[in-house]
View 1 (cartoon, rainbow, N blue to C red):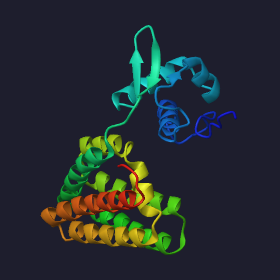
View 2: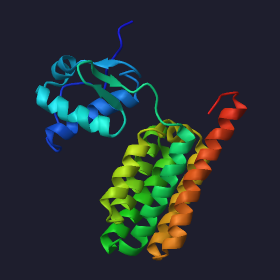
View 3: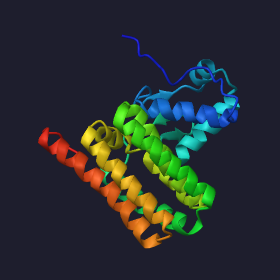
View 4: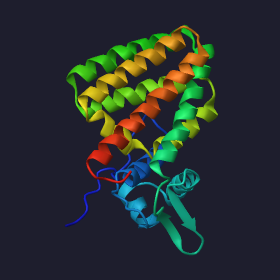
Length: 229
């Protein structure tokens, strides 16, 4: 059966730069396994599918190589990496960085930042009560992005974005369980309360604990199902 590529469609996004959009589309195809580990990426195929220049595709592939998603081999071609970092180690690293972002946000967030987080908490509560796993996941990711932005440290946010590439399956598994989604909502509320109170120590500790608790939840579920983590 021919593989259906849903991410690799022609670029038509007026709100982002062309190179950013191409990079995002190829990355999504890799993470969704539409482009499989070890697969050779044809620049011509990407140019044709995305309807962009070879220069734009080359820039996107270079950015993906910097993130560890592809490997560019001189005179051989570009390949999707064979394997991603171990999920558990990756998530532990992300927990530390997310904690730092929350700490920085506690001291740097503006009133406008706090209001956006407050509104997002309301949206997360609404989606947790009524919505699908995908929509809950999007709302949660939006809250984390607001915390990253309020840290006013672009390096922390960029590093977290790279690490989030490799453990999104973990996040999706956690949010597919309604009770865990409710616990996650409570965690996010507690993180926001610490940021709003300008308590950096508490914000960092709560954010780290939230991510590590989610990790343990998924590990426990996989062990019960006889799966390896």
